[in-house]
Image 1: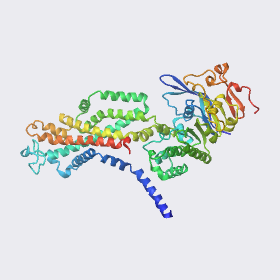
Image 2: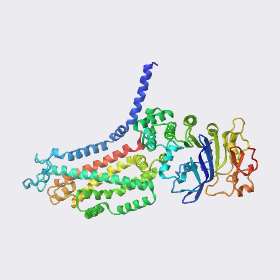
Image 3: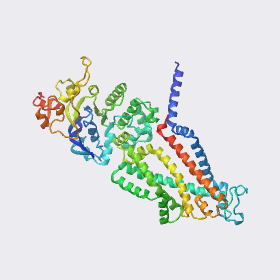
Length: 327
Length: 303
């Protein structure tokens, strides 16, 4: 299938006053048209940085792209002009933020905020057409269009997130970046929002990168999954491949062990020893080496290469070298 | 439940929703009117403002400038024609004060408006973009703020020449740096908010972000500080008038009315306190209005 997005060996660092933080270190990722990819990783693994890079929206004062490129529909995002970027943002790629409480402007009515996206991207639309679109998209996300005249503080958290989703979808983007869209919501609302997003994606055929650290959501919602650690993708495959496989990357396996199993009677979960990689250092070898129980001397000195274990499923780990099944 | 009841229950809900969404001003007004002092300030200020701008309906302008020495020094209240008395040239004090209010209040409002707009643009740009732009704008503001306000205004008037327009320009230059600093601080606070980032992700241009997203969010405190500074400006215009570098005689203006009468104030005290009371009342009521606005616009007091 055709790829809508290709990230090639992306490297991003943040130059702060105290230290240089290496957020993304040689991340490569491909996304096919219509695919829903779950991007899983711990806090600080580089998930949001990756998403912001796709829109070329990294804060220029501190962030620096030191290598790699992001090809969206055949064009390098980092080489785009200002007006090309404006067209990209919102109408081609749009983003849903983690916290609906803060991602809406408190002094603009919901209608105005959704309408603004249309004003920017479809200037030829008349006011009546825009109003119609806004009412349509509001009812699509399950909000009565009359409520559009309200301000965000008059909405509940779940409704605000629906508004945010409506804003992200109103210009019908081809790629949606959802940055932990359900983390700030309680579980019942989470389920509603996920069902809603699934419906919308079926209706509009949008590709999606779903950033989360909830493996349950990934299993239920996504088609494929990429596990990110220390700013690189260490495992990538379809949901079936990654979740059914007993032989995952050691990091992915330990993530699975952190999920409580209802069938066995275990009192404690097994946490991953150690801490997330210090982002101020770039390890010579595998980023997970310090916390890995299978770690060898080689893991510390040599970067593991991509090992395909099946068609479309790769693991970046020395353990899997030469274990490639027949493809 | 019958169909009719259902329908009426539904329409009831819709109408309630409508009232909450358009009732923003009403909520503001409810909270403002709860403050007695602010209401009193508003009433007094409106009376002075309306009386000044409707002055031609009350007295003729010629009464304010035409000299008639035979009528000089009529005490207030002793003549039906000259309710507030007359000055050393026999000019009607009421006419002078009312027409003077047009200049004092009008120039004050205009000055504050210029400073408000200038402050928004300078502060907005420097707070939002930061970096070199910010440094340049802020250092210029620092330089202007290092000079005492009245002195700076006098220097600018001295350089530009006397006249109402020049006076307004000089006073707005004096006010602008403080305004710009305030806007800048407020914008820096907000510019990394998630909804601003969200606006960027859907391709909003910088100017639009500043003026449509950031400014409405800081309007409350901004309006309040502007109102507060209006009092200062009126005082400043009055003191410039008193020093004789503001409005040129015989045009009446509150400060210059006091200054031209100062040699007679010792014997005819009303010459000082009639315009003085007008200055005091309008400055005081403006400060009360500012206080009331701050309380009414403060989101933390939302109930």
